[in-house]
Length: 298
Ligand code: NDP
Image (cartoon, rainbow, N blue to C red):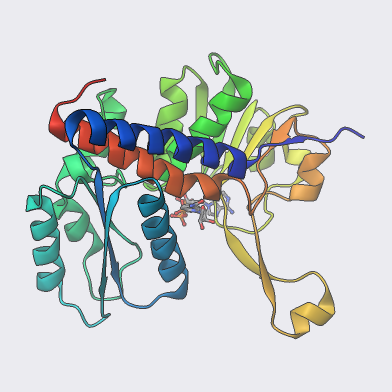
C-alpha cells in the first residue's frame, strides 16, 4: 500500500535558522544592527517554560540579542503592561513575545493590544491580523507561517489547489487560511459546527488540521495523494497499557498518523513537523521586524 512522504520539520527548521543566522551576521556587519528579541513568561506553566527556554537558546544561537523576563504568577496587569511599555520603548528590542496562556486574572487581549505592532513577532496584534487580511506587509503568526513554508517547499506553486483548514482560531486556523488564500488556493475553513466534516476534508488537496483533538482526522477522511499538515499537539496516554498504567504520556497530532500515511501523498509527523517550525519562524519574524524598524529593505 502507498506510503506518504514525511515532511521533516527538523530539516526545514534548521534551514530557516541557518538563513536567519546569515541575515543576522549581515545586519551586524553592514548596518551595526543586532536584532533583539524579548520573551516574557508569567507564571510557571511547565510547557510554557520549555517553549520559552527554547526561544531564548535559539535566538542566542543565531547571534541575536535575547532577553527573557520571567515574572511570578502573582504579577499584576499593571506591572505586566508597564514591562510591555518598557520593551516597546527599548531600541535594542525589535521583537516582543508574551508567552500564552497567561495565568488566570490577567487580560490577554489587553496585553497583546499594548505591544507595538511593529514589534509584535507573534503576529497576534489586531493590526497585524488586519494587515494580513488586507494583503499588506504584516508580522504573521509563527505556526501558520511555518506550515506555509513546509507546503511551499514541498509542493511548490499552490495555485488552484483545494485547501481545507480544520479549526478557526485566531492563533492558527484563521491566519493559515488567509495565507493559503493569498497563495491562490481555494480555501474552506471547517470548525466544530461543520456538517459532514469527513466529506469536507476529502475534497482537500491540502488538509491543515488545527483542532486540538487527538487523532480525530482518520485515514478515510483524506483524499488520496493530499498534503496533510498536522498542527495539533495533544498529550495522550501511551498505547502500551503498561506504560499507560505508569502514567506515561506521549504527544500526538490531530490526524491519525498511521491511517493517514496509507492515503496521503505527504504528511507532517507529530512530533517532528510543524511544531519545530514555530521557533524558527519566530527568529525570522524578529529579523523582519528589526529590518523594517531600521528602514532596511534588502
Ligand atoms: P483552539 O482550541 O483555539 O481552536 C480549535 C479549533 O478547532 C476551533 O476552531 C474549533 O471549532 C475546532 N474544533 C474543535 N473541535 C472540533 C471538531 N470536533 N470538529 C471540527 N472542528 C473542531 O486551538 P488552536 O487553534 O490554538 O490549536 C489547535 C491545535 O494546534 C492544538 O492541538 C494546539 O496545541 C496546536 N498548536 C500547535 C502549535 C505549534 O505547533 N507550535 C501552536 C499553536 C497551537 P469552534 O471554533 O467551532 O469551537
